[in-house]
Length: 125
Image (cartoon, rainbow, N blue to C red; front, side, top):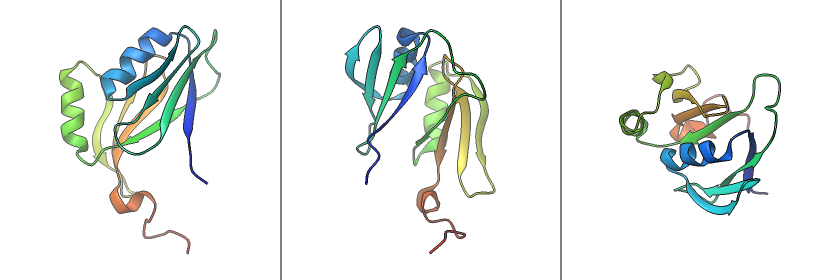
């Protein structure tokens, strides 16, 4: 089994397209005003957004994007005007993470975990 895509809701697809394109994803399907799909610069996964009239209730969605050169990437994004809630920080689960929000308030975690992404010391055999 392989994960094909993740789809998130958005009240404003145009703002979301601008945000995720500036983040570095490549737009590959544009069916405005209802749906768009992106491709990540590395790997095979895709990322979709569909239009909704109301945001989901609760804590929203958290999306993780991994980049080996996290600190450099965050600096480049800050130069583009991205505002971060948390700058790159080493976490106890052995990931280095930065946190920001997309235009709909979804949490975006930019991180680097290396081998610890799937194989932390506490992984079950």
